[in-house]
Every structure is written in C-alpha cells, then in structure tokens.
Length: 299
Image 1 (cartoon, helix red, strand yellow):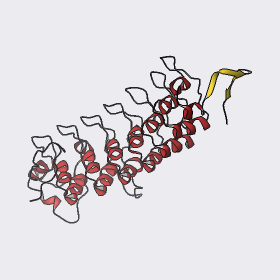
Image 2 (cartoon, helix red, strand yellow; image 1 turned 180 degrees about the vertical axis):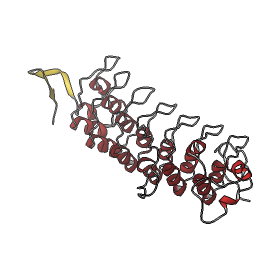
Image 3 (tube, helix red, strand yellow; image 1 turned 90 degrees about the vertical axis):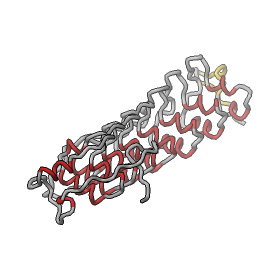
Image 4 (cartoon, helix red, strand yellow; image 1 turned 90 degrees about the horizontal axis):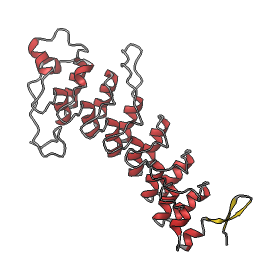
C-alpha cells in the first residue's frame, strides 16, 4: 500500500491503519447528529491513537475525505478541536494535505482556527508557508451558510498572531514573495506594519532583505510605513543600502524615505552608503541643508 504522511509529517513515522468504521460512516444519507448511534459506534468515532490522533486526524492523513466528512458531521466541535501529540488539529492537517472539502466542513462546524501546533503555527500560518491560497481563503472567509444551517460559533482569526519564530502570517507570505496571499491577508485586516518578534522587522523590511522589488512596491502602494524602524533602529532604507541594492534604495527614496534617520549605532543610510557612488547619488548629504532641509544631489 502507498505510504501516507502521518500526523508527524516529516518525522518518517509510519501511519496507523484506520480503526473499524461505525455503520453511521457508511450509511447514506449521513446523519448530522450522533443521536441513535450505538455505544460501539460512538467509541469508534471518539477513538484516539497512541500519537493522539483522532479518527478525523487519521482519515485526513490517509486521504479519505468521505470518512473525515462523516466524522465531522457526527462529532461535536470540542472533539474536532483535539490536538494530537504534535498539537495539530484536524484543521492543521487538512490544510497541510490540501483537502478543501474537509477545511470547509470544519469551518462550518465552528472549530477554532487559531489553535497553534508545536511550532506555534495556526492552520493559516501553514497555508501561507505552503502557499495554499484557496485554503487561506476558506480559513479567512469560510463559506456562506444556507439559511437553515446552524452558524458556527464564530472564532475570529488573529492575523497578528505570531508563531514561535516570531512570524505572523503576513511575514511568511512576504518571505515567500506571494503577492496574492499578501493581498488576501491585507484585505482580511492584517496589519501591514506588523513587527516580527525577534528583531522588529516589518513585512517591508523582509521584502527588502529578500531583494524583492515587486513585494516592496506592492507594500508601499498598500500604505506600508516607509520609515518603520526595527528594534535596532534600522529602516528599510538602511537594509537596502547595507545590501547595496540600489534599485530598492531608489524605490524607497522616491517613496519619501527619511535618509537622515539614525539607527542605534548612530548611522544614517548615507553613512552605510559611503564609498558607493550609485547609492550616494540617491541620498541627500546631511551636512548640506537649506532652511533646515537636506540638499539632494542630482546629475
């Protein structure tokens, strides 16, 4: 049989076989509630493996969405939010293995999309890391429910939530250079100037570090603060000049970047450009001022 990823994706562990399925998961049509199920059927539905995987986890891992959907219909939300030994919920696995019908069913059931795995990642973090735009759309928007369907409890996505590396979803999508995902996150309310937790970089800083001109232009067009400072005082312009990226330095300068801001080492962007004529041509000299304003050199 073809080997499948288990919940310890990347661990190399062998997947468990699915336990015997209750008749409710084989019958048509599926019942939306557990009423009428036998004790044995309920025990099968609430099965938990030695790795902490429920039947829903295992159905997703083994890519059997029909079984997963049946279990989701039968089980209460609290069971569907159970985290395995790696703190993964079924929603994490459905995103990782790209099973949109399962994601939709879990969102409809009202599961909390903000639970974090052992790396601090929510399902939305995984969608950004794996560049699964459709999954992200489902997590952020859900699906319009029919009038006769009970609405989910309505957990709100915290788009500024950071994983254990200090990265919010917008940081991850910026590092991936995925403009479509970045746009989706911003439309959904992500803070464009959110600072990552280790050094205080905003998405604009990260785009500069990646030498991604398109992402830099996109973020500036969407209103990113061009003079945002890291914990050490460095602006995106400091980073562009320090990396000798004249093209991005020009974009930032033309967007109004303050070339006289100093970092904690008392350096301006001009100080970092010393000796590089291409970069110096973009920056004003801080010792030439008229009426308190720096004079910009031009050819």
